[in-house]
Image (cartoon, rainbow, N blue to C red):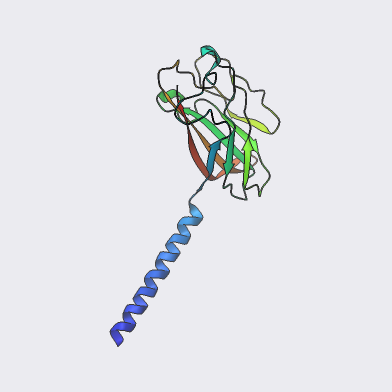
Length: 180
């Protein structure tokens, strides 16, 4: 009998350790957002015709997206655009802009932002202009611009809490834009 009691206590102690470890991890780790394009032309495989940069005949802005799973403390979303195959334009090199939200917003549609400009619609703000070479106009978003070489483009959305100059990331997710 003493052996059985020891096993039960040991199992209970292990459960408490696992529960504490899990709770600690959940508190410190950022959650994942759920993202989807609002226009079905954005299928994640191929950048839609006309959605490339002006240099290659594009006329549209950033893809509009639906963002869900936003933590209730978030007061902004940061959207970063990247070219996975061209290192200078990866990790937000195609621009970063923000979108203000009310704390407690669980999901929201983020509309399109025009390319090649810092003149953004109401509610949007520039986080970092794109890093395109000098031939392009400055702006908060540079549409895919590889000239059709098959580069892979993606966007990352981060739900953040902004206070003055401080920005705390609460959740994030990546969505494949497709190849161009």
